[in-house]
Image (cartoon, rainbow, N blue to C red):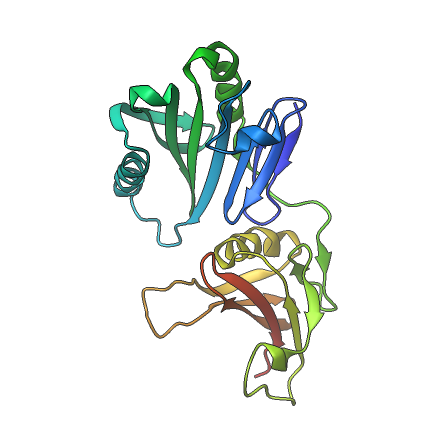
Length: 263
């Protein structure tokens, strides 16, 4: 089976040969063909599995997150919960349940939630009832293959040896920040990564490139005065501040600014 790895969030899963995937905001959906990625499609092989990650930096208990999730899905889809049970995949732990959809929809709906460290994965799988024999074993194998990678291959670094998110391009720091102190070395990069995913990217990749994280302030933060995510990292005698600046509406994208910290 081919393997999908999200370059920022760092989760991986195997999916059936010949299947396709599509990213929409923070959601990645997998299906046997493009048409099946639509909820309105009712033709052959009408089913898909979707993954939506969420940052959980303060390690909130997953039980209320699970309750909120199935309640929201139930309201959106007009479904009722049939029963929930614990779900464990490797070192990921959570819950799963089948939701009963209105009879006229002729569909099955399974939902799951898995957490590892500060990341929570929200899962949904749906298919026509008469295609259960085809989809159920495939979806089960996909969910069982979920894991997090230790490092994303092919990452570029900047002139100071700090990892850069995929597809981020250099820009002027003044395009992102006001009151830039020209006496200090700066670098800035712009891209389309979701700010929550960028935080996970740096927490994972910085140690791989030999950088130690001294402080980390997540965004959103419990302190309303913290308006962006930031890291203070060091490698040898060099200390760098990394700022992830929010941009735009949901999903909130982020720009990356590096500044050499000088005492």
